[in-house]
Amino acid sequence: VEAVGIGSRAETSDQNPAYLRCITRPQIDILTEVSIDNGPFFDANNLASAVFASSLSNAEYKLTVTNTSAEDLVDVILNDSANGIFNVNIGNLAVGQSVSLVSSTNGFGSLSVPNICAVNGNGPIFYDADVRGTGVLSNILVDDTDPAVVICGEPKIVILKQISIDGG
Image 1: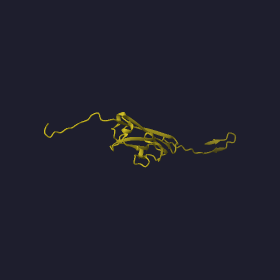
Image 2 (image 1 turned 135 degrees about the vertical axis):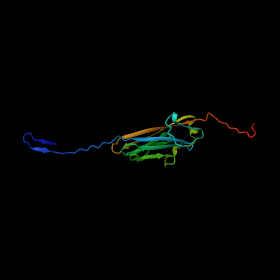
Image 3 (image 1 turned 30 degrees about the horizontal axis):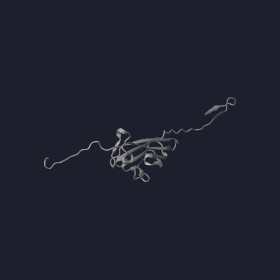
Image 4 (image 1 turned 180 degrees about the vertical axis):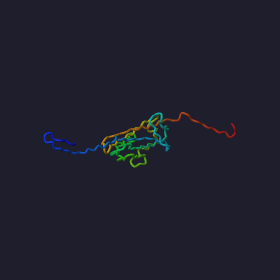
């Protein structure tokens, strides 16, 4: 800033630089997938994409948490109440970092559900897992939720194949 005194005509100036750091809103993503009887994992978000299980089926859930923002996240907290996971701090996530959790991950054995339909009965079972974390620079709290749906029931069609060795 430059100025000239009205009465004295003395010139004066001063500087005070300002810096602006623009950051985007942090983001986090959780993906909940389910596998039946050691099959492939599916992102079963609703009834149309649900996986099917019968009375003796075992279910395995996989939770993948990803920092999808341009800012590191701290205090990332996971909840999956249906599987007994309450306010578990899974640490900090750097930009772009993902963490996948399955029943063999230390402390996450409850992601394996033996005889899922025997425990829950026939019909759809809805699970929701959620995650939250805080941007390290912005201090903004962000969260995400992802469902998984399993439909329990016995097959409605039974195929019986018979072979005759004498044509009868």
